Image (cartoon, rainbow, N blue to C red; front, side, top):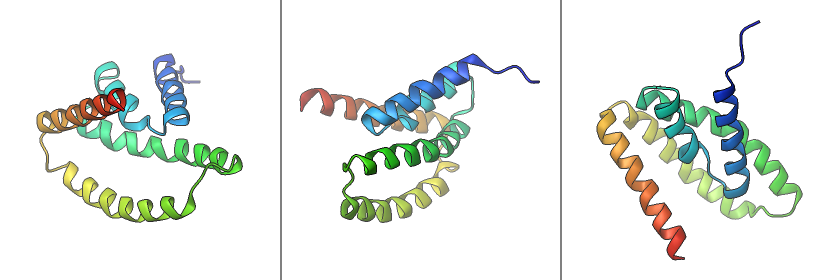
Length: 119
């Protein structure tokens, strides 16, 4: 039996907790962890994060739905835009150099952090 990598499980656990509490985890926890802790190449880290987000989102959505916290009208409209944006972003990912991708991602994280602290 192959040895289970405890670092990967801890990263997954922290990502799940973050996703469940704040609705984000794929980008804020997974991408930096895959790049800086596990040494994954930037583009592969972003692509891998997307695949990790799906099961986290399904579980969280189920729990939010059961607790009456889900606004379907908004969720469906945003999801439609997200599908188009997700397709476009996935196509663009391989065209953006890793150094630029890292800076754009970092900038988004800084802006989000500042907005969260100020509000």
